[in-house]
Length: 259
Image 1: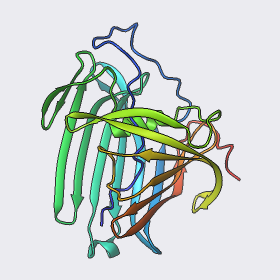
Image 2 (image 1 turned 120 degrees about the vertical axis):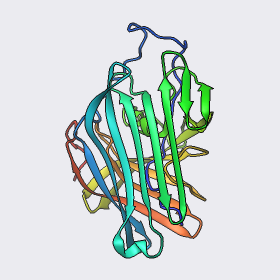
Image 3 (image 1 turned 90 degrees about the vertical axis):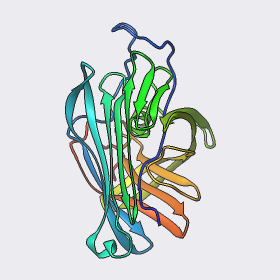
């Protein structure tokens, strides 16, 4: 069973040119999140709470001379589940606070007897990614999967129709991978943190996600300016896993979707 849970959403390539100046750095309007946000989720396998996941922005740090959100995503199985399959996964990304593209990405996976460590430094000025596997050319402002997800929270879905796709990409392990996102409309759902009006999206993940799956992944985001992730449902080899929001703090705006 793979429990690398959560949000696998998107990466993007929307700008051109491999060397930028202060004048050409993209600026993304972001009212969805800020430093200090922390989201906590129960990771449920059937009727059992198998783990706890957190997504947090504990601080802003300097990276390559620019301010960057330090984003940390962690998944840990609970002690009672460790005897079956122990998970200690940690992902970390440093997102430029203006452009929401990454400067650095790290991945530490510990799942049962499997372990993996991966890192990438994005030299956005030179169009290079220096990774655990070597150095690679990258398109300008290429995203990792974490920065891509946070960028996705700034997208306006209000005029999209059911079935409409956003064609996006992300960089992982030496390659740029396609990652389409399908919009599936709206739904009101209840999780431990409350009842919310949500939009539903499906990331069509190929590589570089935060968990491996054998089926579709559906993500519920609050239908407001924050677009806070509320629930993720995915199929795995031996069943399905739900990740549901239990607590939140440090939001950038008001949750007008909460009922």
